[in-house]
Length: 260
Length: 274
Ligand SMILES: Nc1ncnc2c1ncn2[C@@H]1O[C@H](COP(=O)(O)OP(=O)(O)OP(=O)(O)O)[C@@H](O)[C@H]1O
Ligand SMILES: [Mg+2]
Image (cartoon, rainbow over all chains, first blue to last red; front, side, top):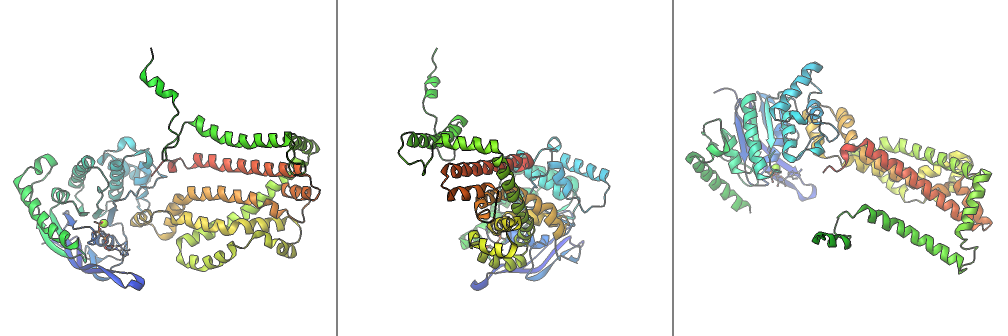
């Protein structure tokens, strides 16, 4: 087996709540994501998915254990990891193209090369026509497409996504999921994707880690063997999808019932 | 032919729905009408002689005073002097408040350092500092700037701190994933994002500076809108007092509008977002 792209080793996280003591959010989580793999973290609300992703991004301190990217310990944010949040994080004073370009501030590419990169990535997410629009002129789905283009434009090794489609309506979300698959197929990056939507996890992932209710631990690891490329209409109708869905829901249900 | 819809148009438009805009004609109409109401009451009360003119002079008396002041050049002199004092006093306050407010909004160290002191001082009345500032700074314009500074700075710095703090955490976090260090994030993200709010703070604090004008020109002045009012009080020239108040009000309104209009020009991206 090849060296994992991302290795989370016995990671725990507790939040200091001051006088009220501390809150154990994540307990001894270990997982690995291999190069070009699409892996989802699935779990009930409050189980620590976001926290784990933020630690991987280097935006949250790790209480115990360590996180390795290509064998190197994560000490803070870095250009080897791109992040997409659930909330809209575009810079409202910049146009779509300028937003994407912003992520290249630290790149050593020439201006012409940067322009070309931006153009290419806007095309990738289907927003070439909106290059000079401002975020407040875009729909929620379009904003997240810009955020994805911006996270990919500097070619990070790993894409970390925290419920990027959580705020979107059902139809837009399905379109976005298919678009993300297309983009991933073309770019072939490694993805760690946080969600609490079972269908979304199955459609997108090679593997799914199901987490327990708080404190979050790894409850199960599921392999999604569905053939690619996947499209909602074809994939969702298959027996394999139904079986996986049932199995995943059962696992998740135990936790939700406990947590609730 | 008469359509059913036509009749509806004649009825009153919905004016009291929660957060629902009303027709502009109504919006401006009621506002001007409200002012007109006071004007009318003023005219009536004075025309009917209900109040001695030493307490409330008639609008014509105030207009005559206005004409007198324009012709003698007093108004121009007073207004330009006061405007200059206010602008300088406010500018000094702003030049200090902006960097300190930004530091306080971003670094807990500076918030801890300055906030207790500012909280202590900001409820002290600026009027009470008049004797002290004269003692320390003399009777020149520096003393006027000091009063305007005391009146605006301590509130302004806290507002700017808040403007900076409202920049979403996610915007800062995402910027650090692009490899920017904290100074670059401060300059390219936090300040850019906070700019519309800070601009609005400028507008509000300049408004406060106007309200402190009379206090600043309370003593040791020989020209200025505030001085004119204080002097008129001594001679019971009520029309001069009312004229002075109205002019301060109008000039404040104009500076306010300048900031409002420039906001719309400068920060188009911040409008109707969210
Ligand atoms: N800064 C913080 N301080 C204290 N507690 C926190 C903090 N951030 C998160 N927590 C707690 O840690 C737990 C995990 O939070 P996290 O946001 O990672 O959950 P999640 O799995 O992403 O949930 P959701 O699906 O609702 O987004 C929660 O109980 C939350 O209240
Ligand atoms: Mg979350």
